[in-house]
Image 1 (tube, rainbow, N blue to C red):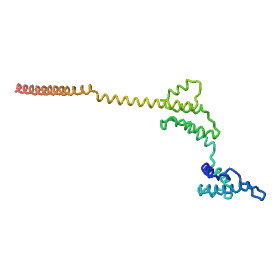
Image 2 (image 1 turned 90 degrees about the vertical axis):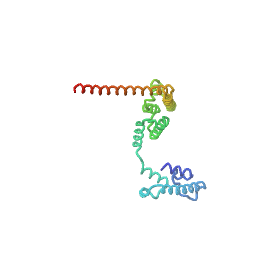
Image 3 (image 1 turned 90 degrees about the horizontal axis):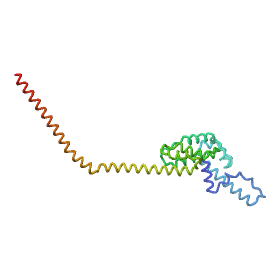
Image 4 (image 1 turned 60 degrees about the vertical axis):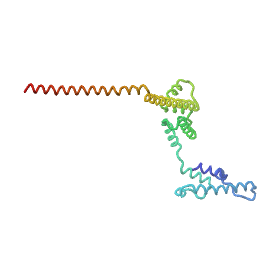
Length: 240
């Protein structure tokens, strides 16, 4: 909110009252330049106060000073909603050191998000060196980047963040290309296997053979059953 107000007033060229204290009261001895500055400041103060009061919630308005300048009102609002910098630092560090690359968005964006947290921490006077970000990024990459990890560990020189990004992006592109080639090869192999003339011929030749085997088995079964019936009939006659 604070940054939005400052940006809007700056773009409208009415931010003087936010960066400058109220000038003294006009007197006869004031120069024309002093009178002009006073008039510009008064106009800026009115516009800034109006814009700020219209952009804050009604419950907050009741606890803010009414007889003040725009700069004083901005300070009062900032103090009212000031967040402990220690809490911000703890939150940023927690997020940074618990990040894991899941493949979404690409490895470049993943490392850039880490650098973004590094920049925010630096603004809070926690200066993490680039080597820390490089180590953290490599440690949180999945096993498919093991070649990059081994390459880094085997070197004495540290990589810059730009070096890291260029290497891991190249490795990711290579892995994607290899994966696509394997998928294409498997698809081609399956297609070739199904449409192979030799396999089709073998299948056609095997079909009559299966039918013949089935016929032979059926004849044998019929023969055995008939033989069994004849034998049983002969035994009954002999007993009689």
